[in-house]
Length: 299
Ligand SMILES: CC(C)(COP(=O)(O)OP(=O)(O)OC[C@H]1O[C@@H](n2cnc3c(N)ncnc32)[C@H](O)[C@@H]1OP(=O)(O)O)[C@@H](O)C(=O)NCCC(=O)NCCS
Image (cartoon, rainbow, N blue to C red; front, side, top):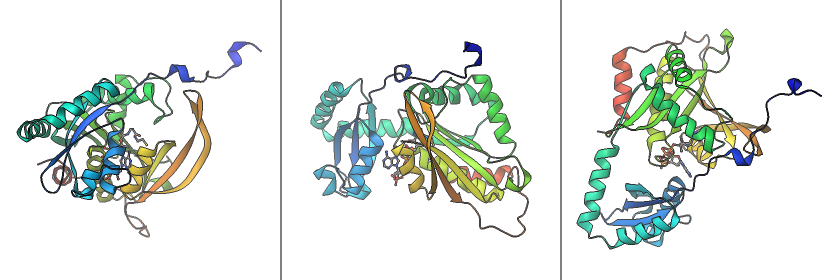
């Protein structure tokens, strides 16, 4: 058979760019003390501290569910993280507090509606997952022009939210697209959320989705759906925590980086099904949008 009749070639394991995360962090316990630790998965480790399932003995006896992340630092690898953890543990409390204060100031989040000029930042954040992970089925990186168009089109009917840190980094974005094109589906949206790979597990996703879902609810949409590739335990846990319910799994739905992946279908009821439903408000008044975003922006 000649090559011109073949479809796209698969993405193989060797096409994946390597990433071995390592972190050190400080947690504030309920008695004000600071706990220093290291991890290769910040979100999972925080969850373990808070639930007690595999968390450190210290945090279990010092507030557990109420411990707060007050400092996070990415390290080159596990060995660097272990060294840095040992150094952090030895720091006097005042120096740990100074690190925490600086981190809080730098990472303070502002949520706002995106503009096409955010396209380069959004593209860079998303393309990291295209090249390193299976959170998205996409093989080829998107271009800035793709995202300029995407942001413009999304904003015609739904929010495209960006969360920037005080020091100017895009920490995450969340948006919604029409679920299907026929008129009868006009009350349904598909939601998307991505946080920068070095900012996951720090509450950005919750702030973005909380604002997004509230704006969609006020617009009069009825159902939000989310598609989550499997495995993606982080996104599964996240959607569950935010009130979504998984109602189906498409087995072996896509192939990327040398493996077959399932696709999980998640649903979130935004409004009860009115009969007949009022038309969706394609754009909320600016003051109403600003009030919702202010609720989810760090003081
Ligand atoms: C999934 C994602 C958007 C979640 O955002 P986040 O900022 O990391 O999550 P948050 O810190 O806001 O966590 C919110 C809740 O989700 C749950 N959660 C998040 N990550 C978790 C993990 N790894 N393990 C267990 N629970 C987790 C927790 O219950 C947390 O609850 P809390 O707010 O009471 O602490 C983010 O991790 C991400 O961008 N991941 C990579 C890209 C991706 O998978 N996007 C989704 C595509 S469908």
